[in-house]
Image 1 (tube, rainbow, N blue to C red):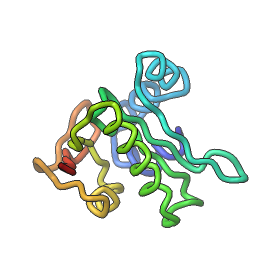
Image 2 (cartoon, rainbow, N blue to C red):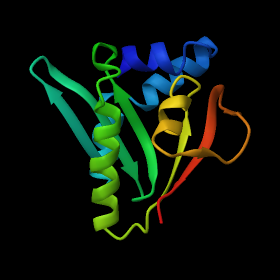
Image 3 (tube, rainbow, N blue to C red):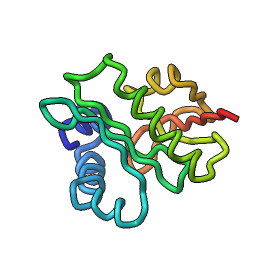
Length: 135
C-alpha cells in the first residue's frame, strides 16, 4: 500500500503530511482497522494481491487500491460491487460516501459517485468528498 499511496494519494503533499498518511495506513494500522470491525475485501491474481477495498461503519469507502499493473481491468469495479453488496446485506440502504483522491476521482464517478463538495484538504491531504446513492 505504501507505493500506491505514494503514487496516487500523497505525491502532491508535503513530506510531513505524506509520512503521516503512510504511517496511519500501514500494515499495523490496517490490522487495527480490521480488529475494529472495518470490512476489507481483497482481489487476488496469480502474482498476489491485485487490490483491496475497505468499508468503514458499513457506509464509507475508506480504502480502495488497485496495483498499477492491474489498472483498467475492472478490478476496482468488481471490488466495489462485492463491498457494496456485503454492506447492503448488513443493512446499508445503498448510500455510501468516499473521500476520493484526485487520481481516483474519475474512477469513482464511473461507479456512480457524485461530488458533494469542492476539493478539500485536511492534515495536508487533498480529497474530493463524494456520495453514492443507490437507493
